[in-house]
Length: 458
Ligand SMILES: [Zn+2]
Image (cartoon, rainbow, N blue to C red; front, side, top):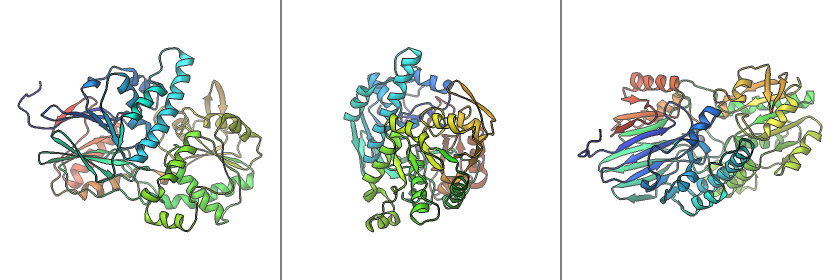
């Protein structure tokens, strides 16, 4: 039952509660302002994707604005559907987030249209809906504040991907921070996630709330060894990579390895239109959003994400030509979990070859093809064909764009002065429970992992 006299903010966790996709939080003020923080797609498995077709658990026309933490599909993917369903408000994010979101949404609508064509039924949204969304989308810089009624909003650097933000909402003398996805550090080009010390409630991601992993720096030497291996054996290195951030980190390392002669000039194919365009957005905003070290390199004329052996294959025809290029070669393609995209064609072709290497650099959702391969499957079905897996499958965790457990704890530890409550989201259920317990035991913080659809007052 709603308490009509409540003077509290209400948060309802509609997505990424006890799961890692579909981020969508409703914030309601006592005066009736209703805003969303993120409105993302459920992803990872067919079962999860079905959730995108469910009715909204709120009336979209009653929402005044959506504040977007960053451009990953699981945070922006349902925004065009909101407009289809009667939402008439504004979208707010940083400028790079808007640019990247447009790319991500256009890519997604292409996939959705193909699926609708194959299985019948209506597509969730099309390019017209995206156009409408873009025309209602406004920029905010980090630390610029904006007020909507009794709520004030401020974006802080999250260091997760280009333009990513944490969103601080102030109401009366309360402050709540939505971390969105948080960044790992050190990052070769992005600035480190900001410290936050003045909030009483944090809604925080904890994708890796139960594990620690290697640093990004450690991956460079390992990648060097793998590239040397395929060079020697004349193999194919396949890297299924998320188009935003993971791809750029790999390009950064390959650039370093090849430009400094640590490995030979093996052809590298960036075989993903989305990744190619996302890399251009990284370059467009590098002078504003990159860290000092990366900006200094650029000032000296160094292209951090481009090198002679790199070929961008934007159209399908170019992509098909890749298999005619003799090994050794390196192919970076989406999707990052091998549940679609051009990587499937390469995996179908080269997974059975013992000289090939599949390098897994990202989180793999349960039941995705990538997870099966990461877990050591010896036979997989790719586009209706049984493929035996003879290639080496190597996992490198240091590329993570998310903090590990110790870094998550450190973030909260820096904000203990007035902190009253942490809501743990964007985490598989066991991980969320583990991290909640850690926060309680190690930091003495009142922590809780909300259920999907649960409302809490603060
Ligand atoms: Zn993300």
